[in-house]
Length: 447
Image (cartoon, helix red, strand yellow):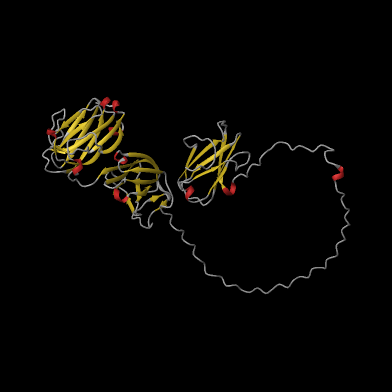
């Protein structure tokens, strides 16, 4: 955020207001205090505003214009110029009825002592001639009253229908910068769900319900090629979701696979750039919810590249995933292409292993907080006969073939205190003659 002014403020806002009814009046926010106070406001349109002395007496005052700035959540911070805080009062009123600016008090005015002015510098005042007596005014003559001319009454003009207020991509919501590899570890954010404008008839949006004009989130996305992106909502009300991708195309969903909670799934190639998301409401009712963003490797399985042939090599890195034991307490899926050309039995690993692998790991995890859990479970699911190879941060190797049933592998790792750090996973095939799309599920357990 560019510098708007000077002052010291807390991290969290002092007050947050949700304006749920459209207002046509400007709103004045004014502070009265015993110190040099400052005012910082984040409007519903995503813009920051600052004032220092607009209310007089070194107190701040701001006016929020009716419209996008008052269409949603407004956050307010009251700070001071230095570390000396003091009690303060925040006053909010419509601009038409706001209190006047307090005049600045500078103390008593000093009088000039008698004799301080040189009498010789004074100029004599010329006497003025008396004003002449006014001349008598003639008696007014009444003007003739004109004969009224009938004026035709025009036909009534219908009042213009106000233009619909639609989701506006020219406004900016709370902003995030993310990449496809980062979102392999799902990220959740609290969102205010609701809206006070119907989206019926909004250009490009095939949907229904209510939404705010400003986006709930503005994402600046990169490295999304080869990933599948999912945005979904969890809440206690009936939300809707609108997304505008990097190419300006609109997407809408009301009820996803989890009942009334919406979900939008898109090819990551559509998302390199700015992406706006609105979390609206089917009925206009407001509630608080959680929006989760995640990505998954979505490219078709293929044979490993020539440069990646050879024995499993921990000097190479797979798709990076940074996560914690707490995050993995909810089962999390990661999508990979299983397969390889190297017979691992010829690689001299310090454990018994069989099957065919690539040199590069499919996934490289950077784990923390694992010591708080008793077990890490790693499961594989696929349409071919797959095998697992795992190397933990302490350099230990683990292998499995069919422990998950249906020719799928599974590993349970119990020495969780040794799992903080880098953990690599290779997913190969038993016979080396086929490659297939596969899923790796990670989950921490308390027992």
